Structure formats: structure tokens, C-alpha cells
Image (cartoon, rainbow, N blue to C red; front, side, top):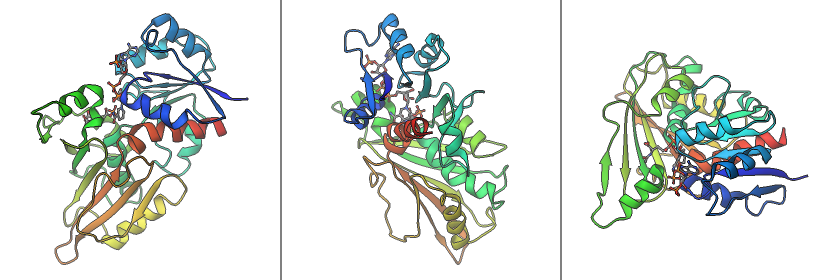
Length: 298
Ligand SMILES: NC(=O)C1=CN([C@@H]2O[C@H](COP(=O)(O)OP(=O)(O)OC[C@H]3O[C@@H](n4cnc5c(N)ncnc54)[C@H](OP(=O)(O)O)[C@@H]3O)[C@@H](O)[C@H]2O)C=CC1
Ligand SMILES: CC(=O)N[C@@H](CCC(=O)OP(=O)(O)O)C(=O)O
């Protein structure tokens, strides 16, 4: 029997990429509404209730409405929006979060797919805190750069218009929507300073976690060993002990791979950990399909 999947928001940036990943699969039947009915409440309610799994690729308010429209106790939900990331009753959709978490995703009814910057940030922080190398109250600083598809259709239109900016910083007020989930699932007792940026390319992101001398209890080799052990339980996170001078945020585009790198200066003890991922791959659509696969294979 095929699994009935409804992508609510299929015409958006994340929804389209999920559709592309699922459209040729023989184990999945896609419920589609078409352009004329995709925002029709009754049509969405019927589709949500007919689906085995609904994948919500909507703004937060519409995603909350979708969950409220489910009247049965069988439709399972993967929500790509921010609405339920730290909500009770939702499993955080990052299978590699910690040992055993993939099973939690597989058995969940409600899965909150992870934010793109949050995926990279948590992937760097959590293993070090779990291993006792980094204090939960450490004053962390994360910088990130993303392609403009991370902002959905509105930012794509803005950045592809004539005269748009080439690069900008934002989130400087330290109110970025990913900070609550980074703090909670990074096992931190205070949020990091987070300075994201958008550059004039479509897709792919890189984040750095600054590790000044004395902040972590270990050198580069120790950190790489901790990351390797943490991500040895399967999934799509790879730990790379490279030393190339440049890291390209687009190097994992159109895949679900996220790579972790550790660099630094052995003489000064100053280090930086780096995560590279596709904001629409492991940062959104790819991870939604990874979570779906875990859920329907359980
Ligand atoms: N882009 C990314 O890298 C990531 C995005 N996300 C999250 O995924 C969600 C979708 O983002 P993204 O795909 O980028 O956004 P887009 O703006 O590209 O797509 C959103 C889609 O939802 C549709 N929509 C809006 N309101 C309704 C409604 N009431 N009923 C039905 N459809 C509606 C829009 O319609 P219309 O086409 O008419 O505008 C659009 O097609 C957001 O919550 C975002 O935060 C998560 C991780 C990364
Ligand atoms: C480049 C860009 O604008 N990125 C978005 C985050 C991507 C996204 O929408 O992710 P979530 O839905 O997981 O929050 C932002 O910083 O708000």
C-alpha cells in the first residue's frame, strides 16, 4: 500500500523541493489540490484528513491552522514552519540530534522539521555540551551566511530584482526566530549571539561557531573525535578533518549532507567549528523527506 502524502504549501520554495523529491516514488501517492484550490480551506481540510502524512510548508499562522483542521487521530504531520519547534507534544525533526533520536522521529505523530540555521548551529553545539567539553552557559557566537532561497518567495523576488543588494547582515537585534530552538536543543542555558547574513546566490549555507582559547576543553583533534563519535549512529551528518583554505556554502547543494569542520591555530588555541549544508536540503526539504522516510518505515 502506498503512503498518502499531502504537501500543504506545495507551490512554495520548500514545498516544491519536497514535491520534486517525492514525485517519482512508487511507495508514495501525492494528494494535490492544483493552483485553483491550494488556498481553499475546505479543500485543504479534506486533504489534511485524507493524508497519512501531511507536510506543512506554510507561514507559521497557516501551519497552525492546518494542524487545527485535522479532525482524526491518524494523520501524521511534519511541519516545516517555525510554529511548533519548541512546542510540547512535538518531536524535533533532527534525527542526528542525539543517540536514539531517529527512533523518536520514526515513532512520532507530530514532527517539527528543524530550521536551516538551527540545524547547523545545533549540530556544532550539542555534541560539545553533551560530551562535557562546552559549558551550557558559555557565551557563544555564531555567524552564518545563507543563499537567498532561505527567505522563501518574498526574498527570492527581492534578491532577483534589478538593483538588489549583494550581501546583508540581519537579526542584529538578537531576536532571530531560530534562537529558542538553538538554545533548547543545544542544551544551552542562555542563547548565543547570532549574526546571520544573506548573500546574492540562491542556495547553500555555512555557519561558524567561535571557540576562543579556553572556551572548550580540548584541541582540534579532541573536538573532531567528539563530533565523529556523536554522528557515528547513521544519518546525513559527516565530520571532515580537512584543512583547505576555503569552504564553499554551496558544496552540498541538492543533497541532504551536512558537513562539520574544525579549524584553528594550535599555537594560540583559537578555534572555529563550521557547518555547511543546503538550506533547502538538510535545512528544509531534504530533512523533511528524511523524517518522512523514518516515519513511514517504522
Ligand atoms: N526556505 C527555506 O530555506 C526554509 C523555509 N522553512 C519554512 O518553511 C515554510 C515555507 O517556507 P518557504 O517555502 O520558504 O516559503 P514560500 O513563501 O516560498 O512558500 C510558502 C507557500 O505557502 C503558501 N501559502 C501561504 N499562505 C497560505 C495559506 N493560508 N494556505 C495555503 N497556502 C499558503 C504560499 O502561497 P503563494 O505562492 O500564493 O505565496 C507559498 O506557496 C516557512 O514556515 C519557512 O519558515 C524552513 C526551513 C528553511
Ligand atoms: C535567509 C533567510 O532569510 N533565512 C531565514 C531562515 C530560513 C527559514 O525560513 O527557516 P525556518 O522556517 O526554519 O525558520 C531567516 O533567517 O529567517
